[in-house]
Amino acid sequence: MSTAGKSSKSVKGNPTNSVPTVNFLLNKENYYIIGFGIFILIIGYVLMSGGQQPADSYNPDEIYSFTRITLSPIIIAVGYIVIAIGIMYRAKTDRAR
Image 1 (cartoon, rainbow, N blue to C red):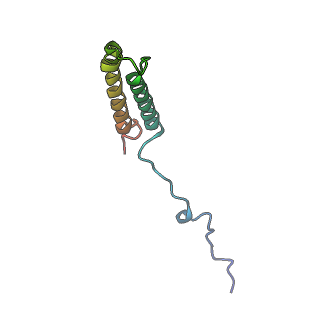
Image 2 (image 1 turned 180 degrees about the vertical axis):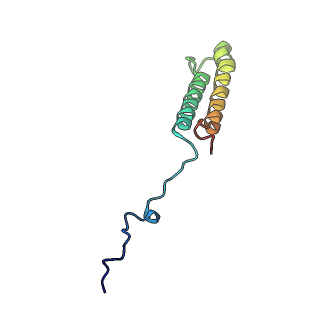
Image 3 (image 1 turned 90 degrees about the horizontal axis):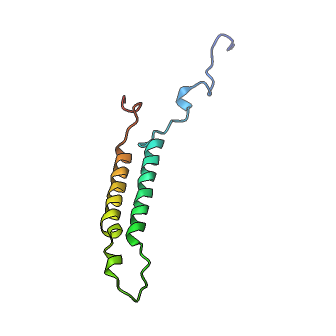
């Protein structure tokens, strides 16, 4: 028996043996946006905890300051909104799918 006229397929040329590609739900840009949102959250929580007041004294002006009561909750809310945007963001090239 001669196999000169038969064509044989190599394993490398067979597309069924190729490694499957992994498609992640979020892209690189999404992770950058989420990371930026987490950074904003950290800043907001640090501002909320701040204060140079000694433990044995009570100063209501320091506790109820504008930074702790108003500014830091707004920054924290912005951080959570940025994280939500980072999760829902789709690049223009991904919208065609």
